[in-house]
Image (cartoon, rainbow over all chains, first blue to last red; front, side, top):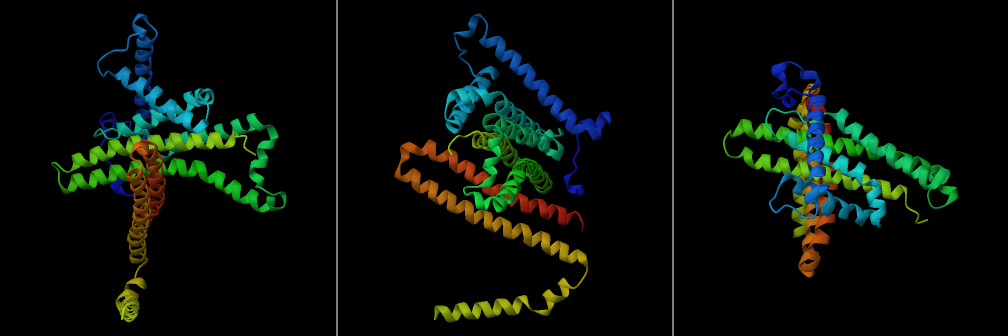
Length: 233
Length: 103
C-alpha cells in the first residue's frame, strides 16, 4: 500500500507496531465483554423489572439488541424463533464490527477492520456458517441449490452459482475493508488541507459509515443464511 | 438542428481524443499510463455510482411522498441499496489505489 495509508498510532510508542490490528480487536473485545457483564448485572438482578430512566450505556445496548437487531432479523428470517437462533452470531458480528470501526475514528488508534485479515476472518466465519447451516437443514439436498431450476442447465448453473457463492465472502470483506480505509484516508487528506473545522464533518461521516457498514454486513449475512436455509422450492 | 449540433460536438470530441497530445502521453512511460488509468477509473466509477444512487433516491423519495406513513419501511431498503451501490464504487477505488501505489 502507498505511504498515504500509514498514520501515527499510540502503539508506536510501545513499539508493537506490527500487531496493531490484534491490539485493536483485543481492545474492542475487552470493551464488549465489560459492557456485556454490566448489562447482564443490570437486567438479571433485583432492579430488572424497572428500566433505568436515564440514557446509560446498558440502555443503549438493550435498545440496539432488542429493538433494532431482533426486529431486523425477524423481518428477514420470518419468525422470531429463527431470529433468536442466529442472534448471537449476527449480533456479535454487528457489535464487533461497529465498535471496531468506531475505534478508528479516535485519532491514533488502529481499527481492526482496517486490516484485510480481520475483515476476511469475519467474512469467512459467515461463509462457513451459512454453508454449514444449509447442509444441516437440507442434508445433501443443499447441493440442489447450485443446480438451478432445470436439470439440463445444471453444468452451466453450477459454475455460475459457485462463482457467485465465492464472491460473497470476498465482497463482504473487501467492502468493509475499503470503506474503512477510504474513509480514514479522506479524513487524513482533509486534515492536511484545513486543520481546523472541516475535519469535524468527516469525523461525523466516519461515525455514520461505521454504523452503516456494520449494519450492511449483518443484513447481508442474515440474508445469506436465510437464503441457504429456506424451504421455498 | 439538434442532431447536427450533436454530430458536430461528437466530431470535435473525437478529434480531441485522437489529437497528438493524447497520443504522446499514452506512448510515454508506463507511469503515465498507470496515472491515467487510476484517475479515469475512479472518476468513471464515481460517475456511474452517483447516477445509480440518484435513481435510487428518486424512487425512494417519490414513494415517501406518495405514502408518508410508510417512510420507515421505505427508508431501510433504500439505505441497503445505497450501500450496495457504493460498494461497487469502492471496488473501483481499490483498483485505483493498487494502480497508484505502483507509480
